[in-house]
Length: 300
Image 1 (tube, rainbow, N blue to C red):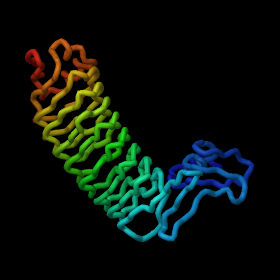
Image 2 (image 1 turned 180 degrees about the vertical axis):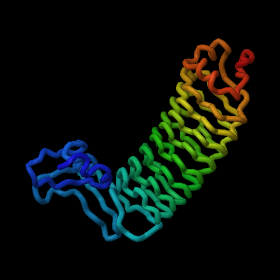
Image 3 (image 1 turned 135 degrees about the vertical axis):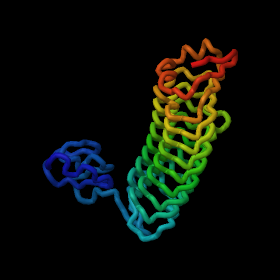
């Protein structure tokens, strides 16, 4: 099988290999034919796929049932009970989808599961979900609100990138990491709230870049790392509070934030100058002229 013959066939979750080729799931050899697969089998009857009367394509392996696709015609969906995972690419670019309710028992939303669902305005995520995968809701332009369950511990890279209709988001206390580009270009976002008792330790590179509607951010005191360009281009930002727990600030985290002239730091001047990348940070963020520390100000 020629190089990359099946590259990009994101929904190719099962391969029946009747040939002599060595094909394994997750492997890019043999034209990527098994790269996206959850199952590769060589004998008849080895399939783990089924399709319901409602058009849901399911992959069942023991006690785990993954929703891998939908071929029905409905635009407002309530996923059937018994699903434990929304597989990556399950609703990839389903433009007609307007709303979806995910049942309790689903623990993860896979990478790019709803990417490009430009008609999606409403999503109900159950409390059982613990992870939201990379680009899970990327380019869901019409999505205006979403509630992230308290049990979620990670928000993947690009998870809500280009969701320009989102106006507010609350990050639950259990989330420990926000991936790079997670909320990139959510231009309608005016409010980001970190729940009390937050365990968040890192804000990824460009996580909130170009969120031009964002006016203020108070970073929780559990955070130790703010990535490169984390809030780059947030032109509406006028107030930022950085906790003393932060030990690393990447390059240009507030570059282009034309309304941000000062930053409040909840530590001393001596602590501030010890933050890794401090000098590069100060050089690039030319609009910021003062750091307000607990024992006085630092002029940049």
